[in-house]
Amino acid sequence: MGRITTRRRVTRIRGDGHIVQRPDTLAVEEPLEIRVGGQSLVVTMRTPGNDVELAAGFLVSEGVLAGADDLVTARYCAGADADGTNTYNVLDLVLAPHVPPRPPNWPAASPPPARAGCAARTASTRSASARRSRSPMTR
Image (cartoon, rainbow, N blue to C red; front, side, top):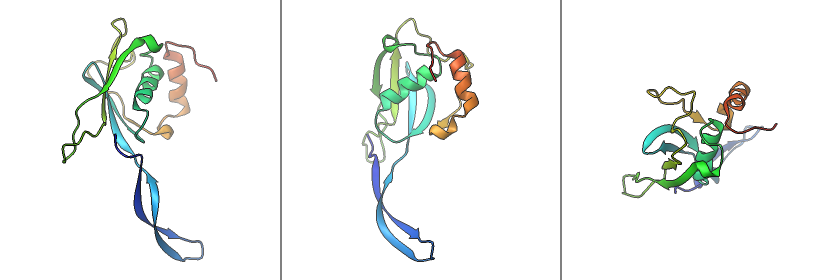
């Protein structure tokens, strides 16, 4: 898995116009491709870490998974950078045989919309998820 933070030189401009350059720790964001049964389902941006939980939660929110028994395995696929190191940015999930591999509201031939971060999900899409979810949602 990639690093969750990185050190970079940043420029801070104070209210009085004074400029200060110093090293700082920044959060890293990397893409995560979520595959189901080897087929690409969605690519989203995330801070690396807890990718299996993120992917499972995404599938719950889209109405694919209703419980822990619906997800059989999750494994990182080979996805190498220029140095040949695995980037851990591709995650393949195997669902139980009784679970359809695509959310019921997505056409089979088109990829789903990409989402980036929590702010990309509006109140109206949360309401739509609540209506189509296989499990009850509480407020």
